[in-house]
Image (tube, rainbow, N blue to C red):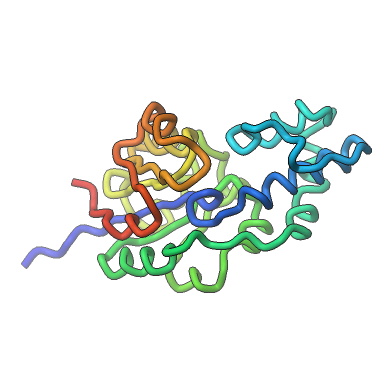
Length: 214
Protein backbone atom coordinates (compact mmCIF):
# COMPACT_ATOMS: atom_id res chain seq x y z
CA UNK A 1 0.00 0.00 0.00
CA UNK A 2 1.42 3.40 -0.94
CA UNK A 3 1.70 6.01 1.75
CA UNK A 4 -0.19 9.27 1.36
CA UNK A 5 2.07 12.17 0.42
CA UNK A 6 2.48 14.78 3.15
CA UNK A 7 0.73 18.11 2.69
CA UNK A 8 0.39 21.41 4.51
CA UNK A 9 -2.04 24.23 5.16
CA UNK A 10 -0.54 27.65 5.85
CA UNK A 11 -2.77 30.25 7.47
CA UNK A 12 -2.73 33.98 7.87
CA UNK A 13 -3.28 35.20 11.44
CA UNK A 14 -5.17 38.52 11.41
CA UNK A 15 -8.64 38.27 9.88
CA UNK A 16 -8.25 34.55 9.19
CA UNK A 17 -7.65 32.82 12.52
CA UNK A 18 -7.98 35.82 14.83
CA UNK A 19 -10.69 38.50 14.80
CA UNK A 20 -8.18 41.29 15.38
CA UNK A 21 -9.71 44.16 13.40
CA UNK A 22 -10.57 46.31 16.43
CA UNK A 23 -7.21 45.68 18.12
CA UNK A 24 -5.30 46.53 14.95
CA UNK A 25 -7.17 49.80 14.41
CA UNK A 26 -6.67 50.74 18.06
CA UNK A 27 -2.95 50.01 17.78
CA UNK A 28 -2.60 52.08 14.60
CA UNK A 29 -4.30 55.01 16.30
CA UNK A 30 -2.11 54.69 19.39
CA UNK A 31 1.13 54.59 17.39
CA UNK A 32 0.04 57.61 15.32
CA UNK A 33 -0.86 59.48 18.51
CA UNK A 34 2.53 58.79 20.08
CA UNK A 35 4.42 59.75 16.92
CA UNK A 36 2.52 62.97 16.16
CA UNK A 37 1.67 64.15 19.65
CA UNK A 38 -1.99 64.47 18.62
CA UNK A 39 -4.60 62.21 20.17
CA UNK A 40 -6.20 60.08 17.47
CA UNK A 41 -9.15 57.73 17.91
CA UNK A 42 -9.49 54.48 15.99
CA UNK A 43 -12.69 55.66 14.30
CA UNK A 44 -10.73 58.48 12.65
CA UNK A 45 -8.62 56.01 10.64
CA UNK A 46 -9.30 55.56 6.91
CA UNK A 47 -11.93 52.95 6.13
CA UNK A 48 -9.36 50.84 4.28
CA UNK A 49 -6.71 51.03 7.01
CA UNK A 50 -6.75 47.26 7.50
CA UNK A 51 -6.19 46.58 3.80
CA UNK A 52 -2.91 48.47 3.42
CA UNK A 53 0.56 48.29 4.98
CA UNK A 54 0.59 49.89 8.41
CA UNK A 55 3.47 52.19 7.47
CA UNK A 56 1.45 53.56 4.55
CA UNK A 57 -1.50 54.30 6.83
CA UNK A 58 0.72 55.92 9.45
CA UNK A 59 2.35 58.14 6.83
CA UNK A 60 -1.09 59.35 5.73
CA UNK A 61 -1.87 60.15 9.37
CA UNK A 62 1.10 62.50 9.53
CA UNK A 63 3.79 60.22 10.99
CA UNK A 64 7.11 61.42 9.59
CA UNK A 65 9.02 58.16 10.04
CA UNK A 66 6.50 55.28 10.11
CA UNK A 67 9.14 52.55 10.29
CA UNK A 68 10.73 54.15 13.35
CA UNK A 69 7.31 54.69 14.94
CA UNK A 70 6.37 51.04 14.46
CA UNK A 71 9.68 49.86 15.91
CA UNK A 72 9.31 52.17 18.89
CA UNK A 73 5.64 51.90 19.82
CA UNK A 74 3.83 49.05 18.03
CA UNK A 75 4.48 46.17 20.41
CA UNK A 76 3.66 48.21 23.52
CA UNK A 77 0.51 49.62 21.96
CA UNK A 78 -0.62 46.17 20.84
CA UNK A 79 -0.02 44.68 24.29
CA UNK A 80 -2.33 47.35 25.74
CA UNK A 81 -5.32 46.46 23.55
CA UNK A 82 -8.14 44.10 24.47
CA UNK A 83 -7.22 40.50 23.57
CA UNK A 84 -8.30 39.48 20.09
CA UNK A 85 -10.39 36.31 19.92
CA UNK A 86 -10.31 33.30 17.63
CA UNK A 87 -13.06 33.20 15.05
CA UNK A 88 -15.68 30.62 16.13
CA UNK A 89 -14.98 27.14 14.86
CA UNK A 90 -11.27 27.59 14.22
CA UNK A 91 -9.86 25.08 16.77
CA UNK A 92 -12.25 22.30 15.71
CA UNK A 93 -11.60 22.88 12.00
CA UNK A 94 -7.83 22.85 12.47
CA UNK A 95 -8.05 19.71 14.57
CA UNK A 96 -9.91 17.99 11.72
CA UNK A 97 -7.21 19.09 9.27
CA UNK A 98 -4.55 17.56 11.50
CA UNK A 99 -6.59 14.35 11.66
CA UNK A 100 -6.59 14.39 7.85
CA UNK A 101 -2.79 14.47 7.88
CA UNK A 102 -2.21 18.17 7.18
CA UNK A 103 0.80 19.92 8.68
CA UNK A 104 -0.22 23.40 9.87
CA UNK A 105 1.72 26.67 9.94
CA UNK A 106 1.06 30.38 10.34
CA UNK A 107 2.55 33.05 8.08
CA UNK A 108 1.87 36.56 9.39
CA UNK A 109 3.03 40.13 8.88
CA UNK A 110 2.85 40.60 12.65
CA UNK A 111 5.96 41.06 14.76
CA UNK A 112 7.00 38.20 17.03
CA UNK A 113 5.64 39.58 20.32
CA UNK A 114 2.15 40.49 19.05
CA UNK A 115 1.95 37.17 17.23
CA UNK A 116 2.89 35.32 20.41
CA UNK A 117 0.26 37.27 22.36
CA UNK A 118 -2.39 36.60 19.72
CA UNK A 119 -1.99 32.84 19.31
CA UNK A 120 -4.03 31.24 22.11
CA UNK A 121 -2.97 28.07 23.95
CA UNK A 122 -5.79 26.17 22.22
CA UNK A 123 -3.77 26.30 18.98
CA UNK A 124 -0.44 25.22 20.46
CA UNK A 125 -0.97 21.47 19.81
CA UNK A 126 -2.16 22.17 16.26
CA UNK A 127 0.23 24.78 14.82
CA UNK A 128 3.73 23.47 14.15
CA UNK A 129 5.44 26.68 13.04
CA UNK A 130 4.77 30.41 12.90
CA UNK A 131 6.65 32.76 10.56
CA UNK A 132 6.61 36.48 11.42
CA UNK A 133 8.06 39.55 9.72
CA UNK A 134 11.26 38.99 11.74
CA UNK A 135 11.69 35.60 10.04
CA UNK A 136 11.04 36.60 6.42
CA UNK A 137 9.89 39.61 4.34
CA UNK A 138 6.17 40.17 4.67
CA UNK A 139 3.57 39.15 2.08
CA UNK A 140 3.00 39.70 -0.82
CA UNK A 141 6.58 38.42 -1.00
CA UNK A 142 6.56 34.60 -1.02
CA UNK A 143 9.52 34.25 1.36
CA UNK A 144 7.44 33.61 4.48
CA UNK A 145 5.56 30.78 2.81
CA UNK A 146 8.79 29.19 1.64
CA UNK A 147 10.26 29.54 5.13
CA UNK A 148 7.25 27.84 6.73
CA UNK A 149 7.25 25.02 4.19
CA UNK A 150 10.98 24.46 4.62
CA UNK A 151 10.45 24.09 8.36
CA UNK A 152 7.62 21.62 7.77
CA UNK A 153 9.46 19.72 5.05
CA UNK A 154 6.62 20.15 2.53
CA UNK A 155 6.92 21.06 -1.15
CA UNK A 156 5.00 24.14 -2.36
CA UNK A 157 2.96 21.98 -4.75
CA UNK A 158 1.61 20.09 -1.71
CA UNK A 159 0.52 23.20 0.19
CA UNK A 160 -2.47 25.52 0.50
CA UNK A 161 -2.32 29.11 1.77
CA UNK A 162 -5.49 30.38 3.45
CA UNK A 163 -5.74 34.14 3.83
CA UNK A 164 -8.13 37.05 3.86
CA UNK A 165 -6.17 39.66 1.90
CA UNK A 166 -5.06 40.09 -1.71
CA UNK A 167 -1.49 40.06 -0.40
CA UNK A 168 -2.02 36.52 0.86
CA UNK A 169 -3.31 35.40 -2.53
CA UNK A 170 -0.44 37.05 -4.38
CA UNK A 171 2.13 35.47 -2.05
CA UNK A 172 0.56 32.05 -2.52
CA UNK A 173 0.53 32.19 -6.30
CA UNK A 174 4.10 33.54 -6.43
CA UNK A 175 5.26 30.79 -4.05
CA UNK A 176 3.67 28.05 -6.17
CA UNK A 177 1.13 27.29 -3.45
CA UNK A 178 -2.61 26.84 -3.89
CA UNK A 179 -4.49 30.00 -2.82
CA UNK A 180 -7.67 29.72 -0.71
CA UNK A 181 -9.68 32.80 0.28
CA UNK A 182 -11.04 33.20 3.82
CA UNK A 183 -14.31 34.97 3.01
CA UNK A 184 -15.00 35.77 6.68
CA UNK A 185 -11.99 38.09 6.89
CA UNK A 186 -11.24 41.71 6.06
CA UNK A 187 -11.46 41.65 2.24
CA UNK A 188 -14.28 41.04 -0.19
CA UNK A 189 -14.53 37.76 -2.04
CA UNK A 190 -14.28 39.63 -5.34
CA UNK A 191 -10.99 41.26 -4.29
CA UNK A 192 -9.55 37.91 -3.26
CA UNK A 193 -10.58 36.21 -6.48
CA UNK A 194 -9.14 39.06 -8.51
CA UNK A 195 -5.85 38.56 -6.64
CA UNK A 196 -5.78 34.88 -7.62
CA UNK A 197 -7.82 32.86 -5.12
CA UNK A 198 -8.42 29.39 -6.53
CA UNK A 199 -11.12 28.50 -4.04
CA UNK A 200 -13.28 30.40 -1.57
CA UNK A 201 -13.97 29.18 1.96
CA UNK A 202 -17.22 30.76 3.19
CA UNK A 203 -16.67 30.34 6.94
CA UNK A 204 -14.11 28.97 9.42
CA UNK A 205 -15.85 25.59 9.58
CA UNK A 206 -15.12 25.10 5.88
CA UNK A 207 -11.39 24.95 6.62
CA UNK A 208 -12.01 21.32 7.53
CA UNK A 209 -13.12 20.59 3.95
CA UNK A 210 -9.67 21.32 2.48
CA UNK A 211 -8.04 18.38 0.79
CA UNK A 212 -4.45 17.79 -0.37
CA UNK A 213 -3.57 19.56 -3.64
CA UNK A 214 -3.54 17.25 -6.63
